[in-house]
Image (cartoon, rainbow, N blue to C red; front, side):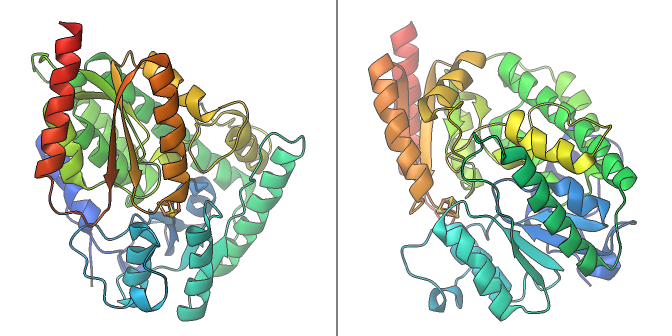
Length: 392
Ligand code: SF4
């Protein structure tokens, strides 16, 4: 029976970070090994998924983030073209090789053609699992957007209740919202540390702490974050002479850890869009009233930005510039996953705009199965030196 790695008991920051790193590679637990209160698991594909709804029906939300650079693809190539991005291929591989066999269900979103079609592959190959597309709106700027999202959430809630064999009343959904609101506050605090004292927490460490939520019940993740933040605040590390940069392009497929480490070696990453779906709602969701409406309204009105969500209030260039301004960054690292159409499209718009406004940037492409980082490390070193030279 697969079990998660043991959780650190004494709140030591290094132990917490090691635990998070091990969780990243841990298998999805079987139903009889789940934490108390959960009867099954829902795998959700990036970018955003309303975890509160699954949590309230007793299905543990498990973020599906591909297979990393150790997974060998043996079956997925027979199901999709060679031009499909890595995360879709490796997720399919993990379904076909049995690594995701413990999931009760799989939810994807129409963020791009490749991601949308995963639901069909899932339904056909794994009929015992619930396979759903959560149709989040293509355009949130219409008057009916909140009503539409609320109806879609209700539909998904009913499907998950059927799968879990258990209904969720509004009070249990409000309790889940409260737990996730606490999580949102802690994550905002984590990112504020990155912005104000980036020498205390690297982008890699922050990413590992954030990513742990894709495998832990929210309440457990809250405890982990509370302990980690106390440890980070107590760190005594002197600031180094490194440029402040923002990192964009990590909203869906995840860059390899080694790439983040190479960036950390040269720069302070003071903000990023890594796993932005886990931080999508930017303020507390109302804890009174209709909880489904509250989640839907928050999705539309109090949410972040990404290349897969059209919102005329957040232009491609505008939200990057906001990020740079808010975090007082000197420059941007503008990345995209290989074969990611939404990401590459955004990268072109960002680069053009940064040229126009005279903000320095470095363009990088990544793939989850990358294994050589020497050339990238050299590019980063040269970039960081040029920024420091320009401000000297
Ligand atoms: S990485 Fe890009 S192309 Fe691939 S599923 Fe995500 S949004 Fe779609």
